[in-house]
Length: 187
Image 1: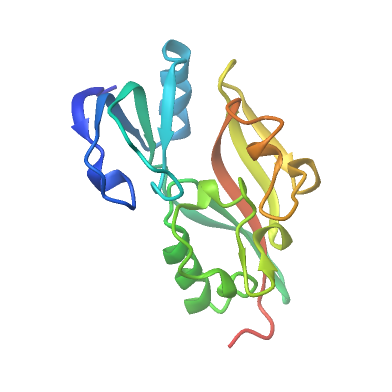
Image 2 (image 1 turned 90 degrees about the horizontal axis):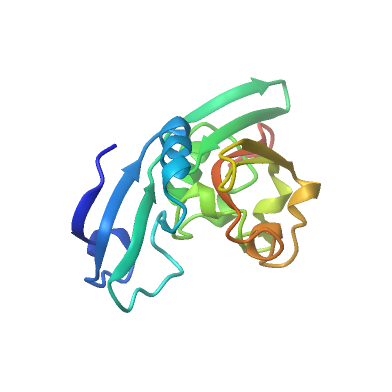
C-alpha cells in the first residue's frame, strides 16, 4: 500500500479548494480497501468530492475511493441488470447507459459525484429518484472488513435520504451499486 504524505486535495473536491491530507491513499479494489481497514480506522473518505466543503487540512488518513468497473450481470428482453463500482463517475455512467439504450436514470444526468455516493442521499431530478432503479448496494463493514449487501428495501430510501445517511452512517463504505434498467422506450 502506497500511503502518500502531504497531498493536496484540490483535484479531489468539486470546489477546487486547496487543502492537504496529512496522509492519503487512493484505493482501486475491494480487497485493497479491506486490507487497509484492518490497520486503519481513523479515516476520511473522499469519492467524487461533491457535496463537501473542505475548510482545513485533514489529519486523518484520506482514502480516495477509486474502484472502477461496470458489468452486465444479466439481461432479458425488457431489462438489464448492472453492477457498477463505487469509483465510477455518475454522469459518465448515465451517458454510458444512454449510449447503450438502457433507460431509467437519464433524468439524473449532470449530477456531480460518483456512483458509490448516489444511494447515500437517494439522488433525484425531474421526477426520478435513483432508488427506483437500485436493486442492491454492496459495502464493506469498517469494523470487521466484511462485504455486506443491502437490498433496496434495506436501504430505507426516502426523499434525499437512506440508511447510509442516518442509521449506519460512518459504519460502511459503499463499494458497488446494482441497478435494474429498462431496454424499452428509451430515446
